[in-house]
Amino acid sequence: MQTPVTFIIFKRPQTTEKVFEAIRQAKPTKLFVIADGPRTDREGEAEKCEATRAIIERVDWECEVIKNYSNINLGCAKRVSSGLDWVFNNVEETIILEDDCIPHPTFFRFSEELLEKYRNDTRVATISAQNLQFGRKRTNYSYYFSRYNHCWGWASWRRAWQHYDLTIKLWKEVQAENLLRDILVDPKAVSYWRRIFQSVYNNPTGITWDYQWTFSCWIQGSLSIIPNVNLISNVGVGADATHFTSNQEFSFINMSMQAMEFPLKHPPFIVRNLEADNFTQKTVYKATALDIFKEEVKKRLNYLAMKK
Image (tube, rainbow, N blue to C red; front, side, top):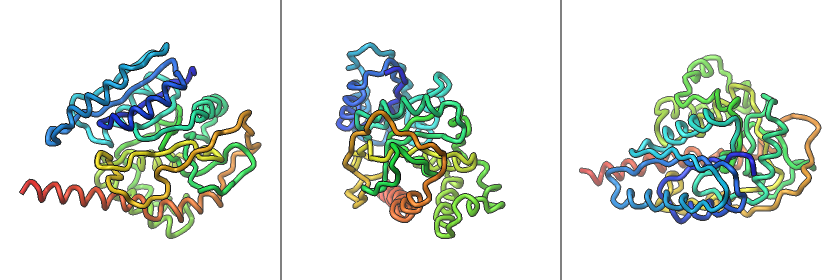
């Protein structure tokens, strides 16, 4: 496979090994690896980071491996965003996987073909592996277009990532002009995402990088490609996870996957699927983001209590 793959790792050798094996089967000719450093106050984390990085040394196919390893802990927001800045400074396009997202083998071909097809089409910003329609078929084509840029397995271009801003400095103007109303229409969705973006704006280097990516895509009027079947499974729930540290009953964790059929059936239009997006907003985004923030606040309070 000629398309570069970007692999984001940290301290979970068990899940990293599973994703690495999927990458190994695809055999990309170029592999970028982004790794954060251990936290000094977490016992055993340095050893976990070392064990995770050791997996990358198992590359046994013809592949140029390019590493960006941090010696210190930058945190999720800074590490992922700075790492992707580095990747897109080196290549025009890439497939991106995190250490807990296992892709279906057909995701690589799906991404590679669509990266080429929409390479110069600025209406499209991302190609996702994730389908959150829970078996509901939204189109007779291989994929549809969405406002939601799901980041559990995705691909993009430098031309799209150049608009990314970790600090979402345009939020105040977007808020003042009430632009979320123009983007989302639904008052409940507007209220929901206003809280999310305000939280990110108040603490841009906190626990997340991907809401900033959503914001960047929305203010550019960009669309995401969503496969008509789910091509990714997140296996990251557990004590070592950054966000989903407990067995929360989120139905999009450990989702089953299906193979993408080829040749791809391309839609003859680039129009957002309103029905699919409304379903996603009502079923997925009604809880997940706020639960993540609540989980992080709970973790920080527990940590402060332990230090006293």
